[in-house]
Image 1 (tube, helix red, strand yellow):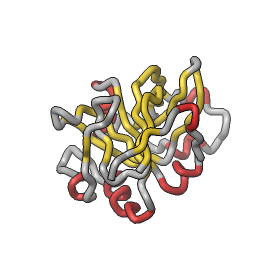
Image 2 (spheres, helix red, strand yellow; image 1 turned 30 degrees about the vertical axis):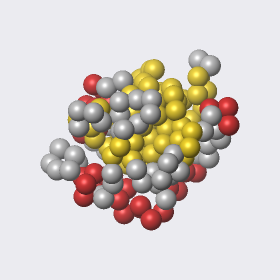
Image 3 (cartoon, rainbow, N blue to C red; image 1 turned 90 degrees about the vertical axis):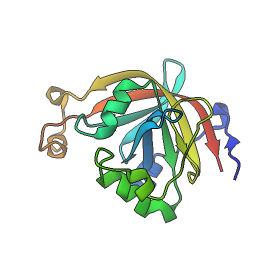
Image 4 (tube, helix red, strand yellow; image 1 turned 120 degrees about the vertical axis):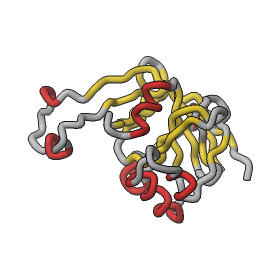
Length: 169
């Protein structure tokens, strides 16, 4: 099924998608076959520096982290509820030890505006180019319960990606 482009000016994001449906973050290069994906449920979307962006968080211990560091672009894909099992695989298994994307039954495909792949089965795809990153610093935690998310002290790196293209099935 063909994707339809959504103009940035017409884009409206419901943050409950991250909490309730999750998203798949994919970084790397589709043409070379060098990429990895992971499920995310933390992030934000908005405008900064007069650009629409997604902010995503990746721990340095995740295999996808190396792809985020090496490549300039990434995609975020939203799937229907029938893919919850596939997203569970992408969120719980590492791409270091095997092809978890194939195991999840997902089909990578070329994106329109970035090198990172998107997925044929996705309902919505956001194609992004990194424009800023920063590391979470526990010295700046104001709420007492934040540290509970880091028993191994593996603090996330936050990436801001300018949204270059949005498509929907």
